[in-house]
Amino acid sequence: MLEILRRIEKRGSLEKLRKVRQYCNQIFRYAIATGRATVNPASELTSTLAAPKAAHFPHLRADELPVFLRKLAEYHGSPVTRMATNLLLLTGLRTIELRSAEWSEIDFDNALWTIPESRMKMRRKHVVPLSRQATDILLQLKTFSEQYRLV
Image (tube, rainbow, N blue to C red; front, top):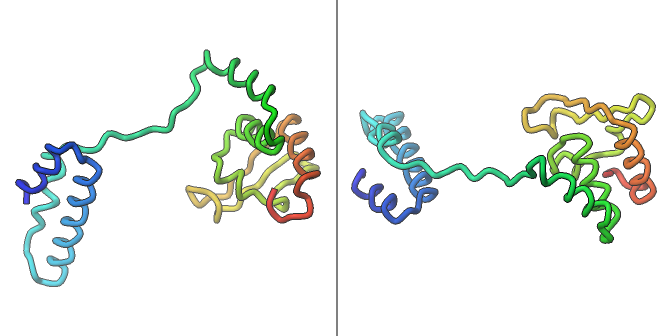
């Protein structure tokens, strides 16, 4: 098994290597559970093979922020896109949380956005305090989508 995995590793297909190793591990775990095998050789190979490099999402450096904000202010495309981008910056939320936001989650009186646990990555309710700027943007967005469930 190691010989086959090394060939995949030498090709530089580290993501494929990870998947093949994972599948082998699952197969042997099942074989042990059903009495068809007594050891799992795949579980011992994790430290001997290369792991794929984590690909992190690109981010803005502090020195790039002024240019980005200027370009965002000058953006002449969809106003909803501009407002959504500003909301992401003001709230620190992930795009999926914003894209699936519902008007029922927004409490304008207390300037709070309560995202239910069912929509959060960690499955815990998340309360986001809304700044005056974020509240203003949400009020502007209401003119576009108040008649819908989603913001």
